[in-house]
Amino acid sequence: MHLDVYGTLVAASIVLLLGELLVAVVPLLRRWTIPEPVAGGLVAALLTFGLHSFVHVDVRFDLALQTPLMLAFFATIGLNANLANLKSGGPILVRFLFVVVGLLVLQNVVGIGMALLLGIDPLFGLLGGSVSLAGGHGTGAAWGAIFTEHHGLEAATEVAIACATFGLVMGGILGGPVAQRLLKRIGHRQVPDDDQSAPDAYAFEEPKAEKPTTPGAFINTLTLIVISLAAGSEIADLLAGTVYELPTFVCVLFVAVLLTNGLVLLRRPVAEQAVALIGNVSLALFLAMALMSLRLWDLADLALPVFSILAVQTLMMVLYALFITFPVMGGNYDAVVLSAGHVGFGLGATPTAIANMQAVTARFGHSHLAFLVVPLVAAFFIDIANAIAIKLFLMLPVFH
Image 1 (cartoon, rainbow, N blue to C red):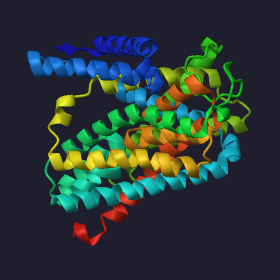
Image 2: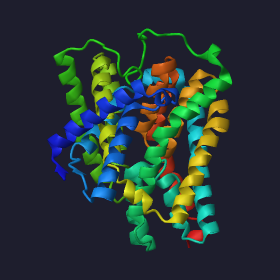
Image 3: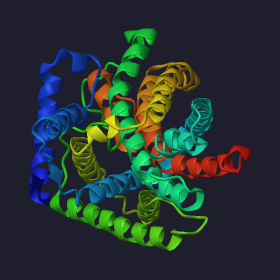
């Protein structure tokens, strides 16, 4: 069964509506603050898994819009990155970056150590470490190709994609429970009491808030996003194959940051309401498409040693968020939301982190600091740090 691009878009919209319904009627999903796209997407993925396993029918989606939606989401992150605002969160951002880099190093240490312990190529440990978990599908596929071409590791790209898929699922499932556990630790006395929409909320902080915008502001913002996508893609192509190679979404985000801060200098700031609208729609549809198109049977085919590495990595991520991220970031409500976001992109991807934080703040209250710090660290700084970390680990004697 093949759904064209329009059918896929309809299916993604239905998945979002299904997720909203499930979270509304299933107390367990609300209690563990599972994001709506994750709830609906996993149900759709289980349905396609059942059709594949028992009816021998494969549902194939046309995912032509998935990458543009992802890039549009990262462009809106960049357009939301006013450097003047970042000054207020500077020390916290630096502290969070150190926490994030610490996890990158630990993921690779654990991955390589588990691979050696299980008697498999230590490159599989890197694939089951920061390459695919903190790196996501794009970074995993890129390094998988390198491992095959330069290190002779067969099926490295397939393993990387499967590991990234596993991380995406677990990152979306576990962020809410981690936040719930931490909220019990701090007690509700530290949770902000703000049921009303906050006037100073950041773009992704209130996905369901109705904020006024105009067709002109929408078109202007859409133009900036398209320019970011076009210029970022060109830059990524120019850097491909060089020591400065970066994923396309990082280049797109960088262009968007330059655009928005250039407009601020010209006293023509972007329309934040339009940025929030386009960003949240792109985020929701991207996550729905990513999760509903999961080939869960590929995860079932993971070799036991690689699956064992991923299981240990998942446990370590939860423990790291509970006992490192949370206390280092202040042990308060902002630290709870930051920890939920860290689980999202530490195992999965930036969109998962944002969805985790939105699910927590929609239920318990705003965290302006988290929505200031996480998008830039998760979408920009982490990829640069990850690339450096991977290259340093590949210099170890065990890989020669």
